[in-house]
Image (cartoon, rainbow, N blue to C red; front, side, top):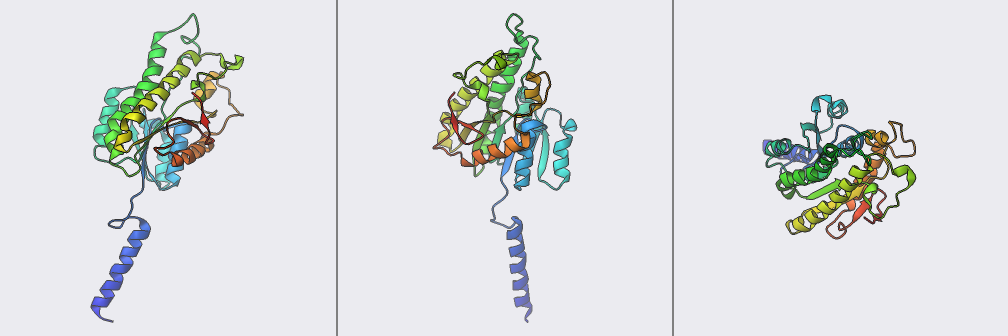
Length: 273
């Protein structure tokens, strides 16, 4: 066999290996997702789900040093990067945007949210404006600022999706049952209703840029946030975060320009709001 033929066969073998590995010139690269509030609960579930898919995961947290579960994903061979981000702090958002400048982000998931107060300052007769302002800033303005700062990254990607996680408690027509008339609802529920409207406006504005903006609610998920509403007690009837995340990932897969002008549930059904 001639040296030339041997070289050609070797070159073909190397090229095929590169294709199979997804690293060859001209081959499709892994999709990239950025998740806010990914250090625990539903956000951590998203990080695990997309890491298992082979995606590049940019998982953000206010305190990356404390994000042990995220770091464990990375040590398990997953393509996971943990970045510092406080969605309630505009300087923090801008700093991350500068760091990620020029990096395509196929999917941005606005997941981070707060539901604070523990009953103090959030009930009738005890309203504390600090808690209201914090929840509105984190749950509404935060996703808007993150979406604005990272919009160039999303536009530079192939998928071009922004998804915000809302709550079934944001539905204005939802009956106020006795068990739901408790602390946190005065501030948290309006913040999620406002998030829905903010994302609806954003969707209309960036549509012409080819960016799809979706709103998805996870239903009841047994997270620290939900437990805080029920005196820290585990909510055994609620979904596990990893299970809920997988369902929402499937819904996100189906979101297109033609079907995002509504709020989608984790079960793939449209809900009123």
